[in-house]
Length: 261
Image (cartoon, rainbow, N blue to C red; front, top):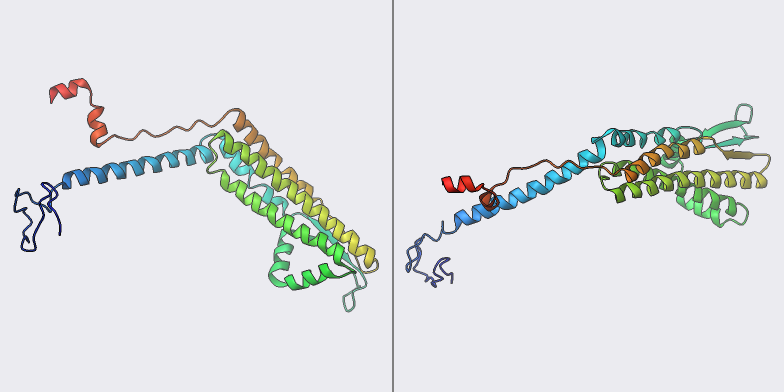
């Protein structure tokens, strides 16, 4: 059975009224003011926590010229992905105009290839092949490195909204550097694939790494420079002052106000 919240008297089955049969307190409303005050203080604490996060978000993204520059510069490396990341040339193609096809490899062609032509089983079979296995290992590494570079670039952009601390800005430098290194690794591995496959089929296929690899890697440098500046001169977060309610407000009342009451 339940007990009275005030006097802790044990209630019987016949005690169906809201008043305690012993002390007479209304058990439904007893302590409601304290509970409402506790809920209000909890909501106030959650709002204060949210406001601090919002203040850090604003300071990280649009809180100053350096933060805005970092936000804009972190998008620019995407443009480099649309430049030639690699080149392929196919010769002696049957049923194809003059038998020659030259095309550049950029992010659009990579996406189109994955959407329409990529076959994991086919790639694994090519890797296991004693004839073309080594070149296709280079191709697989190039694909993975390119994917990781893009992921790091997206991560670097997202971190701009939560990098108000000195340590976070230092981590951004590492993320940018990894993205730049990975795109270069991808280009080098593609070049190894092209030269390896050309050595096997010299009359049919040739290729090389494109200049877009170096441009994309170089476009990460300005972002790194801005983050270095933010490490040397950390962001100062201006927290919004919130009104104080409840018991804390009572404690912060001036002595004159307390005397007047």
